[in-house]
Length: 245
Image 1 (cartoon, helix red, strand yellow):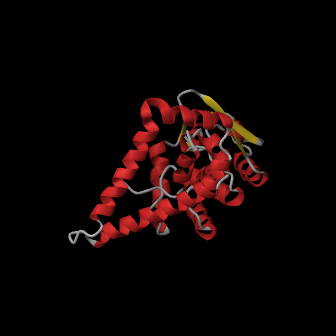
Image 2 (image 1 turned 120 degrees about the horizontal axis):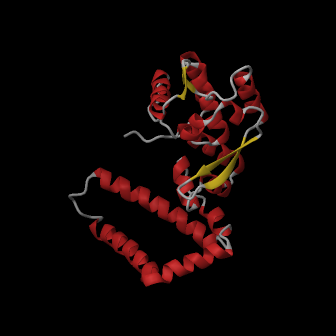
Image 3 (image 1 turned 90 degrees about the vertical axis):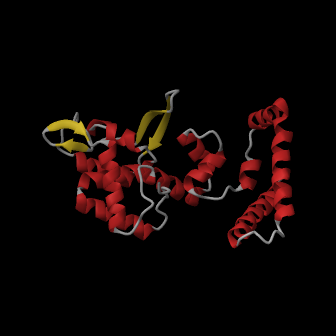
């Protein structure tokens, strides 16, 4: 399975949108709504015209606990949506599957179209999460606010959100913005059943094994490549930890 990545280049993003227009304009609307808000594909497909027309915000329920989150629609996106829905049945689905039946495009069909558009312009890392990841990556690059995205997507921690957008965690930001409640929870979890020491010992043992095996003549180049990457990541994390007050 291919890793689904955000589209990080503005020209490529525009080309992808133009390709969807050529295939079917409704998929362009679907894509713009996803990239412009961070909404999930299944939520977009469930919308009827009245759900998004003349709306500045859209509130949806996310997760098994039905947590409500509000997604903002920019003025430019509002204009695109309003022009598309003008004169259409308010109760018809926004991304209509067949004109003869009021049913939305299936998630599988939307996925196939996104993948096909990607292949047309040479992108292989396209999937159902491409729109959301692209929105999140662009927002993070513009604001540096990983916590807004974490809350918007209901992620358990900022590290999950960093992985979601394919960015290295800014540990200085994470450490400085930990709330007292989060710090208290961390202390509890680290002391619970000795988990903190167990985790530290696991890391120490792994690094010790690597150190002891570093001069093994049976090691191939890929082993040293992995070790070098691991050390770079650790050194960066340790520097941020040591410098964060």
